[in-house]
Amino acid sequence: MIETNPKRRAGKALDAANFFLADVRDGLGPYLAIYLLTEQEWNEARIGIVMSVATIAGIVAQTPAGALVDATKAKRSAMVLAAMLVTVSSLLLPWFSDFLPVAVSQATAHAAGSIFPPALAAVTLGIFGTKGFTQRIGRNETFNHAGNAFAAAAAGATAYLWGPSVVFYLLAVMSIGSLVSILAIPERAIDHDRARGIANDPKLGDAGHRVSGLSVLLTCRPLLIFAVSAVLFHLSNAAMLPLVGQKLALQDKNVGTSMMSACIVAAQIVMVPMALLVGAKADSWGRKPLFLTALAILPVRGVLYTLSDNACWLVSVQLLDGVGAGLYGAIFPIIVADLMRGTGRFNVAQGAVITAQGIGAALSTTVAGFAVVHFGYSAAFILLGAIAEVGIVLWIFAMPETRPDDRDAQLSSNKLSAPIAAIR
Image: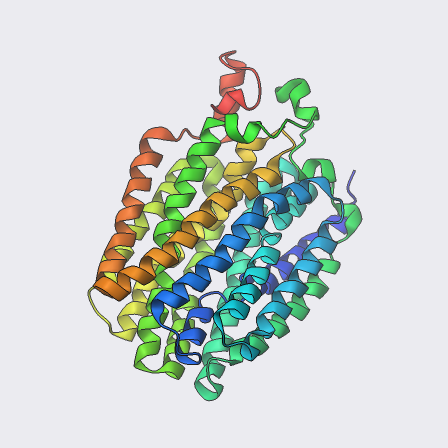
């Protein structure tokens, strides 16, 4: 049994880790596009390609990262090493100007960053268990968004004075905070069996006590539908903020970076109540309507971005990103936990779905970059919004509700028996 004090201490350390890792886990994020556009004078298509290369590296690493988190008890050490790799790879960027070293440094950062989503979710599940997982994930995302808002506000305030390169120094400071926070999580507070989804639940029978084969990733139909939906979400969403940043930076590189920070801060502020909403209501409202809302925001954003190039307008529209991304980020691990309950494959399943969504993100920046070069920014935004509409149709007609109460009702009525079959 987990002691009360280590559990309370672990919760506070998780708060801090989510806050500081918010800036570290994505490396330079959307600031990379601004830096390459204004400091290195790359064109939009070349920027899109290097961002896609980096994202592909994260894709390749993501499923193995999830498998590693399932298998290892050194989850804290894995996150510490990853944070160091992300930081060093990003801090070396000012010394690079050619395509290859920039691509390699960012590929390394993205590959290392792939460890954070499954590791944080696993540690959370291992400490708080299934019953406390939904509410705690909402809290995790709240501190994550608060960290992003703080980092973006700091970057915006200082970039006006010292230029876009200030983001490198901010990343270094946040990295130090993340290392201290991760190591503050008590190792004895983590139940590693529970962290990978092995459940001591009589409703699951013997299946809840053993690790399922990896074939579960291909035989769980709702997991496959969820993966496709995640691809479409990120194919639509990933390029929108970088495109907004590029439009702002073309007007004034220093003001562009500051306004980009304003976009991020605006979205992150909205994401905080969205994450809290998921934590408080996902069990009563269900998972399906919350994810559907996240998808539905994207076509609206795509249209609104085309109406004006005014900086204040673009920042205002970015508030909608806070609604969509806030809901998505919080509901994602909850849905995967639902689908993988009792299989022991929670983290590798997270990795597999993140791999799928990473494919969408990689294609998004490349497609959008070429669309801008050949047809302009407005056409690119409309195209991205149309992709999300496909995801909306799929989600409405193909995806079942994954809430445990619905699955347990199926089990009790003897319609289905195995934990995975119960959500097919």
